[in-house]
Picture 1: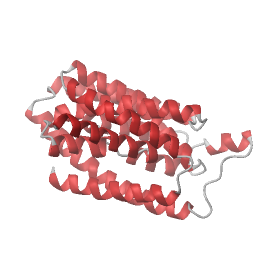
Picture 2: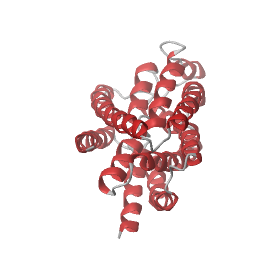
Picture 3: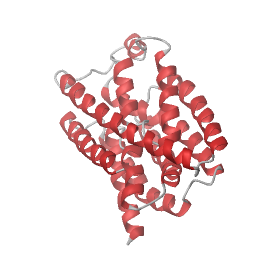
Amino acid sequence: MHNIAFVIAGFGVGLIVGLTGVGGGSLMTPVLVVVFGMKPYLAVGTDLLFAACTKLGGTVSLARQGLVPWPVVARLCAGSVPAALVSLWVLHRMGPNSVAAQHIMTTALGGALLLTAIATFYKAIAFSRHAKPRRPEPATPQETVSAMRARHGSLPVLLGAAIGTLVTFTSVGAGAIGVTVLLLIFPLLPLPRIIAADIAYAVPLTFVAGLGHATLGTVNWPVLALLLVGSLPGIWLGSRLVARAHERLIRAGLSVLLVLAGAKLISI
């Protein structure tokens, strides 16, 4: 029964990630810890590789639709990947299953879930404001370049570094918080491209962090395989629907995520 439960959990999270760009770590890591009783350091390492594989499938689908703004992805990765490497070095020095590391990871996880809840609430308000009119697709190459210009040139790198650190310690942050960051620093970028950028930049970040955790022995490989069996079809379906989905549906999904993230925060 546990095997089926892991597959179902993977499908549900994958579907939410594909539709909204959020939900991976903020849902899966608490589920692994609270529902399945997994140790926090194993849950984080397993979820990082789960997120990497899941979002890779979504990125391929979104790239084929021409929705991924690659310059935005590159700038975020310039900050997040080096930060992940530094964080892995810190974990290696501490020992991932040490008391100090476990305290940092569980405390950071609780804080990250709280930030996720706040970020999701903000997005619900932001999407409501953009519902009429919708964020339009750029009509000319000049408008496309303008839409991918950040409010300040250093913001994507700096905020990417902050998210990279948070993700490496908790596996949470590349989704809900990442989308909120993109909304704030790329205000002209259309919603489907915001979601596509968030999913795409998380792939190298979570692969680097996840492989680093694997070298520390903090990945449960059988559970990872079961989660992926469910998640890959889920994110494929969600990413195919994202460009046609009504924004009210997206807001409803984000509201559900807010409730779930808040409940898991209280439980941990």
